[in-house]
Length: 553
Image 1 (cartoon, rainbow, N blue to C red):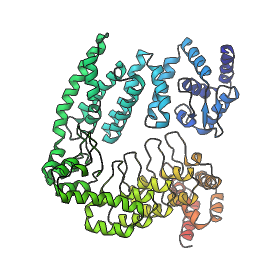
Image 2: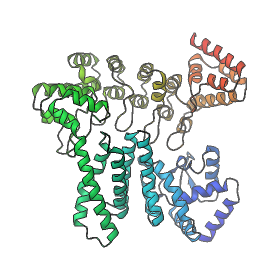
Image 3: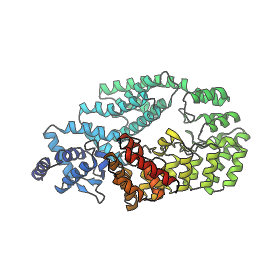
Image 4: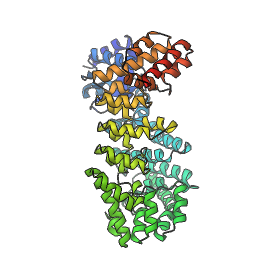
């Protein structure tokens, strides 16, 4: 079989797209045997046509098995083993793994890729030289996020990496310990002079396990024992640092509204957890600080989050007014779910501070209204100032939820309530784990009316998710394909000065025409802007007339 495989690889190497095909094969040999999405390999082949051709070439030589969609493939375990053996013999495996590490870390937050990532890490751990890369890639991503002042992204990467390494190697593995040391150093460097403590909390979440390991570990390896000592010293520093950050909790317990406002305005997370998983809302509720509870809810506190003892703020209330307020928040979520909009209006009139409250998943009342397609409740909540761009713990906005539930009416009022640059960010917002936008969701469900609504408000028609897939690639619906293909043809035609674009647009119904004209590409250009950019004055003039006609239809 080895001779046959080498012959197949040789034939592939001599074919068109052979180089790209072998890059994919070599990397895939280190993945798990589960389904692999073609989009994971855009690092090797960025052009979708060449990527598909490379996969077809591998399939023709029986090196991979393409699934029905042709955007997913598998590779048999015996083939993987032989490819890895060949790469080792040729001393190419380490270089391949280094590239593969870069690929998998870019998909680190995609839960469907977890087993692939773990497989790559296990293979890479065989090379001491790659351990630096295994730790270095996520540290680099976190460091870059800190420098961009995107702390939430840095914390998410840290959390995902820590859990991944523990699951792959165990707590006591030297690679895991070294990662924790680098995390500790990075957090200490970036957080030392700020009031942000979430990164410290992520590391300290594993504190007890680390200390226990240090106490129990009979180290046969002096370097590893030294690593434990270094890590514990850093943890002590971080604990001391954390004590300075917990002042939001003490301010909440004291009911000091000025301090609470100051900390939140300077960036402290209103739902910051201490080492006992208690939030400022827990502290304020336990001490019966009604005004502090009202302020924290106004700032988006999670009303039902549980501490380390499995207690919610409501369960530890010491004040009847506070208790009544939290019950009102709880009832508001239930009322929206039940569709009782009139009662919701009454409840908000009684307790205006409840409108910005979140549940433990980071969902606000607009998320809940979207889940139930409750348009009346959504409009009421927008009218009282609830933020439709609010992002849940999983990274979903109410728009993502409404698109998934095919609630075009709610999507319409959401998009009408947001303006300017904020609208563009909102309509193209991605769910982090897969990079999915609302348009990807609508296209995947074949919801053409939803797609038109999103495009009409400036959605990017060719935006890609974390797997390199556009909304067109995410859909199997012919009507969805027709609409997105038409938009792509129009943009291509305008760039080439093809006046047939104008003729084609005049045949389209006004509603669809506005969707096409307002759609944007990933350069943030509309069709009209693309015409102007390409100095197609006649076409631009015709497009303006078409827009005016469609609006007045």
